[in-house]
Image (cartoon, rainbow, N blue to C red):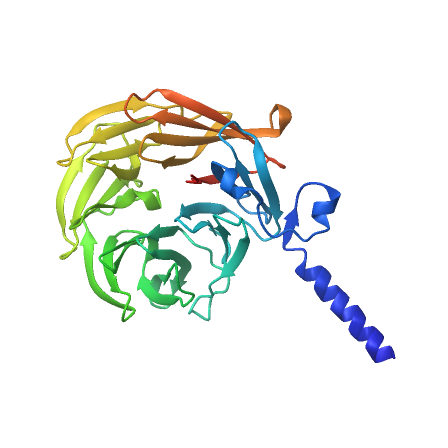
Length: 376
């Protein structure tokens, strides 16, 4: 009898423990239902991940473009959700300080936590610099750090319709990756150099590697600085992050040889951190509040300014669709009605402001990242 009683107590503890990962918000009835997803996600326009830089705990919330909150949920394990990505099936948020990342089903709103362990025995909870969706793949890195062989990272990737994951060690930190013609292309960097690497997913082996001409001072600031330019070429935005004196550049990299075939110098003060190809135009965003548009020869066509925040509101994230640019700025302090930030959309043709969506939150979070929910 004592043994049965002890077993019952143990099972009760396990049930309570397993129920505490996702901390639901809402009324008392919802809290007792062990909520594991976001309701009405098909009606929402944005999904936002809020988190802290060092402290565990985060919030996922979905909004309509008028600012109404369709649903939100507190997550115990989320920490420094610094990047996100979206495909037709799921939305992803990755942690920069933990291997616990999150996948949200775009139809059901169900949240799944996944944790990909490092191949290195010397590290346990490294976090990721990026997560990305490209063609039909999901890719993220594991920030292994310094090893006996030098600075290393690992690339984890899988097809979004399959559960099997592949993993490969690469020299340097992996800061971004794209898939083109069923091959993976990754950008890596160490304290002085940058490289582009091609990987064959069928063999899970590195095929080619080429240096990027960075003069030991040029590096990338965002995973979206590396994008597909056309079926034979990639584009990469690099900035002088060491001396902050050299003009920024956009490089064109050949898919087959991995060599840089063109360098375009940006005007003084324009620091591109995100690139996007929309039809026959290249859009480059500088975090100081300017957007520039280039033709297919990278000749500048036009530009416009956007509001990038001030001493009280900081720029956190930028996303695009075919017609608009969306800018998320977040305050340090909660405003009236629990508003912590806003998403403002700008028409890409005119540069005019289209709409502003206020973002209500449960806490004064330090970081906010978001994705557009392309619901019909």
